[in-house]
Image 1 (cartoon, rainbow, N blue to C red):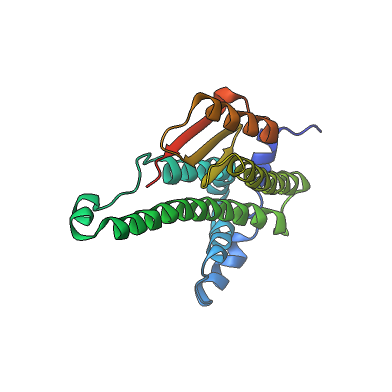
Image 2 (cartoon, rainbow, N blue to C red):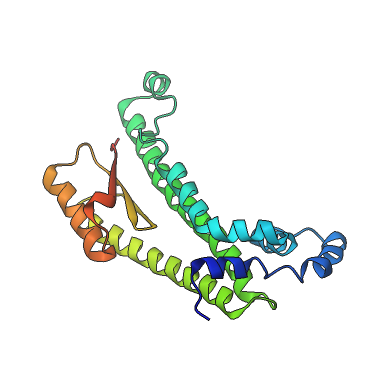
Length: 218
């Protein structure tokens, strides 16, 4: 029998069906799980209909979280900039602004990691399930491998972009698209071309599917 994505998704729905009754009593008496362990318990306790939905959209959901968190606010994170300028001298203000810029990119990297970790946690639950069919485990395993590959590709892209003189950069690859945040006061046409060329060479993503966002330096 030949399986397609729909077959695999439907098969995933069967993974926890026989586990639900056994897990229910245990879950009620044990300590509540924390962190990503909570995801695994939630997946095992869901019914067939809900698990199919979750496993079908988990990667899309992670991409939505990434895009909303990283790119929802394209303006520099200034906070109380006006009030700040009246209370500190130029040297102190530059230090505070630089610290905010560092925090912006650090937060972007953390948000990217958390979204990926949550997606992998759900997929790993499928891989580790004792009731999962081979096709379901294979699909989940392939998705985990793809995420790992995307993480490495993002790191390569960031390293190469920084080598072009951009001090700060965060790249996100998802579903055949790429979004890149760079710290810049104004990208020149040749710089835009350089970034798109790097993404194309590393990820094979067409320029039309590459989104470049400027985070103004402070």
